[in-house]
Amino acid sequence: MSCDEVSDVLEEAQALMDDLVVGNSGDDDGDVVIDGFSIDDVMDDVGLEPPAIDARSKVKEGEDPLSAINSNDHPLTSTATTPENLPLVDTPPTSAPTPINLASINSAQLNAGLADVKARATGFASSMANFAQKAAANVAAAAAAQPVASNMSLSNSNSNIAATAAANNQVPFQTPVIELDNEQKTALIQKHLGNLLPGERVIMFLTNLLHVSDSSGWEYNYNGTAEEMWCCCMTYYRVVLFHTSDKQQQEPVPPGWDVDCWPARPTVRQLQMPLASMERVEKSVYTTSQNTTLMGLIMHGKDNGRQLRFTTTSYGDTLRVHESIQTYAFPGRRNLGYLFAFESKREDVVKSVDPETKQITLPPTAKRFDPIPEFRRQFGASSIWNIYEKTNEKYQLCSSYPSVLIGPASLPEVAPETQRLLRQMANFRSEGRIPALTWSSSRGDGASLWRASQPKVGLQGNRNSSDEFWLRHIAEASAAVPKPALPSKEWIQKVTGQPDGMGLTLSCSLKIMDLRPRSSAMANRTSGYGYENTTNYPGSTLTFYNITNIHGVRDAYQKMSTLCMSPSTSDVNFSALIEDTKWLHHIRLIWNASWEAAYTLHVHRVPVLLHCSHGWDRTSQVAALAQL
Image (cartoon, rainbow, N blue to C red; front, side, top):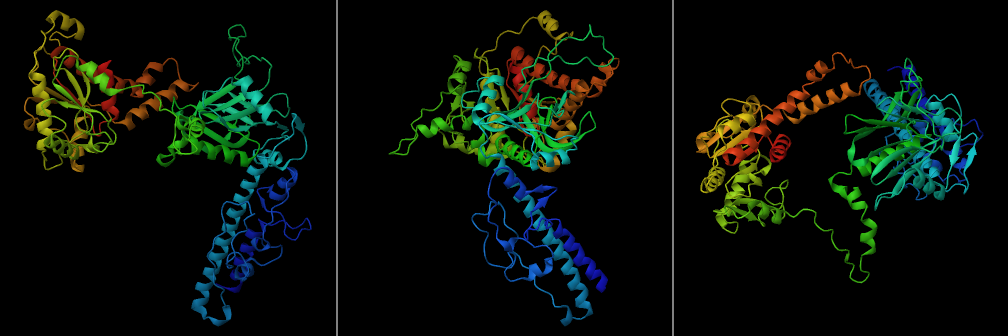
């Protein structure tokens, strides 16, 4: 590396540092600026004093950034910590590069040393850029949280926040800022949203949205006047975008439509999406119908690919909304307390704490479903099944199963042999999902519906005596009770629409329905799973029903939703296009399996065992539809 290249490296590092420093105002320290966003200007606009930032955390104009790195009192090399009054979330990196003496090293070391200088200079500049960007976002959030005037006012001042948003979002006019106090915000919410749900509280309220649109093609773009304003209100339960104007405007007639043929309907005045129905939220750049590029948030819903898009007047507000949605809509397992079900009760729980004992005195919410009375109702006078209340009381056997399980009466729960059998059977089934009762006939005829996951058979054809013993007892308990007479052949033919009535006789005491394609079940054997060998389960039959996995069904659903939501879909070929999505094909397969399960239960009154790979998607769908 030549001396000219060394000079280029230093100039590149200096240029990166110059992006962080503006010194033409006469201030030695300068203002930290990120994409035209000045921290000090924003602090001045909202009437706040600039924070007392340590001079060592800035690089002055004209100062060599590499010399600042090697300085003993620079934050990167000094042992001093960030001052407590510095309103920043993150501190600069603490690793300190070692100064390099170019005169004391040979040519080979020089090239390696210069490469190290370039890497360190670039890394330092990037770190400082990230540091300043986070500082700008924090100051913007602090500025937005300051109290405003008690009366609604329209400000046409040169606000850095509005001007920056207009510049970055290509808005060809200045955005007025309508400032509201808490009382005015509450009045707007009450007027346009009505009464909130019990326990629902407002987390965030934003005004002056530049753009609002949804996936149907409707959109609102700020036109440079203060006659209308869209607001964003976020609660523990939902995100609502609403219009504050009292004018009743009619939706414009699309080009090419007769005015008399277009129905008169008001324009969209409110859009909302519950947090629980959000699939994801992302910061993105999108183009409006007016060819304006905007940077804002896109909320993706789980229902038919629905989307809501909006743009705020500042990047700081966008970050705040994004972080709030990520916190309350997707809290993760460790922060389930952020869910609306818990947040809505937080105030009541806190008020009920006894100041002396520190115990919660609020009575628990009454159960909406109690499985024990429900199972007893299903069993009727039958005594062939037994309720297991302790086996999975703390979800120790299977974490995804309910706390109450059902088993054959011939296997009492308190017997140690039964507990050993259940543990061994859970080890043999994927995710520990043993054959569990879902529905039982109240006639005492042995008809019952069971669900499970695939067995761990593998390529070696593994067996499990506990699993075989459990299913044999289920089949024997059902076979030991009297069965009602079969319906007439004519009735069955009328119901099924087939001459043979789907078979008037059933040569099995247990029907196993594997809802997967046979090829998928065989492929799973290479992973240590598979399907039951009926030779090891006497009196059983096994049938595959070719229902694809959740990914295939989801893809078909998304294709169908896109087709239905697209305004360019051909009406002439609509039926063929819907058929090409495979959505109806998947629905037919699910209905077919559900019908056959219900038919076997109703006509032949024998136990039916459902499972797929892991026993959740296809199994749950068919089990629920069969009961209906």
